[in-house]
Amino acid sequence: MNTKIIFLQVIFLLSIGNNSIGQNKLNAQQQTTGLTVGDSVPDILISNIINYKKRKVYLSDFKDKIVILDFWATSCSGCIQKLPLLDSLQNKYGDRIQILPVTFEPDSNVFKMLHSNSKLKNSALPFVTNDKVLSKYFKHVLIPHIAWIVKGKVVAITQSEYVTDHNIEAVIAGKIAAWSIKKDLFNVKTNSSLVELKPEIPKSTFFYSALIPFTDGLAPANGLQIDSNNKTVRYYAVNNSILTLYASTLATGELSNSIPLFYKQIELLVKDSSRYVFDANKMYLDEWERQNCYSYDGIFPIACSIDEIKDNMRASLNAYLNLQCKTDKVKTKCIVLSADPSSTNRLKTNGGKQIIHLSDFLEKQYFINVGISDIVGALNWHKSLPIVIDRTGIDYRMDIDLGELKISDIDSLINAFQQNGIKASIEYVTIKKLIIKEK
Image 1 (cartoon, rainbow, N blue to C red):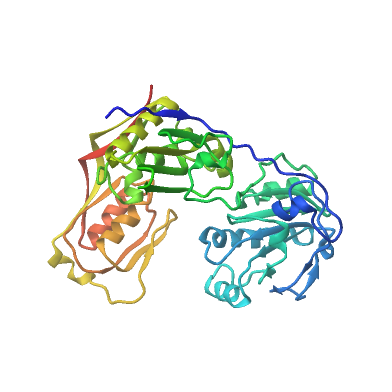
Image 2: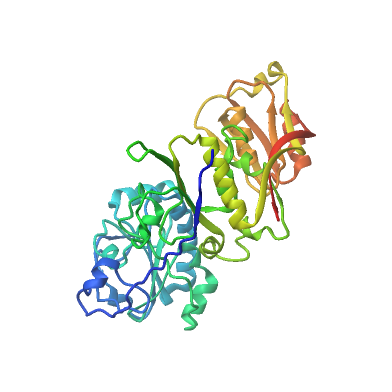
């Protein structure tokens, strides 16, 4: 098939006003975008506070403190994982800061979350619930969303990972870094072509393959759309890492559908892996995403097969990113689990809640009421372990106590499985891998 592919590189520039506001209302632009860095904050009445000495307060009640607003929801697991750290920071800095987690949800949802989370049962954090006010001043789409306020002015709007001991110390000392501003896009139609976000791009019908730099405010997404009227098919991938983009070019079933196993089937032949794999010890995630994530958008004739589209996408990625990508069979170190099912009958579960407890710390590791696929899947999430393969033939749910060990201690892990009647051995198995190398 001879299809003319037009490569586009589109850079989206967001321009947000930085005008100050009056004491009691937002100006016209801020009614659309909310407050941003440098704006003054009115003396907002904050209602519906729980876990605090007052039910209502004015923002000015915290005028001598650094105020950190954390917009979150009980449906956001990442938000909840951050709360214990926020609680510890509040305890450490006391009257010098005030952290306020803010949610649109009712009191009952928050109380339920607090009572069910052992790390938050004794939390000192006040929670703002049923919020309809603060979210108008600090507009956002993606959570967590953090607003920093010092002496009545917005000094930063960030991701949650910026709320650290080091950064709070810096703000207290008046040394506010030039952090990236978290910017969310509003009213974006996800079923529209990404190039339509810029009206000056021609709307005439044409086929194209576009690689677009990371766009603030768009959540990662992937999809396939068929337009029978225009006889086109579109494939898009929004704000994906390079590895995830290449994964999208694989034929169905070419590598494992299991996310943790899939990433262990990638072999990077590169000088510096930091372009491909995020390292929290080197930079913030949002900064890494801005530098190393892209969106792909392609429109093709409807006659194109999915494999032809993926081939075109891979060629585009190779050309723009100066890489070569292929799949190949490689002998790979693995942990292979095997057993005689009759010898493991004693492991059959006694029922109860399904629990998988694995950690990188030296502590008791165990499984309750889980299948062998659950066990293998959980082990493959651990980057310190080789690929784990199941050859046990076990088809019932089990309770397994591995005892006290570190998951990264492979010899101890193998020994623990063997004590439970499951043979674990190191073998070199031929595995199909995605090989990426620089040109």
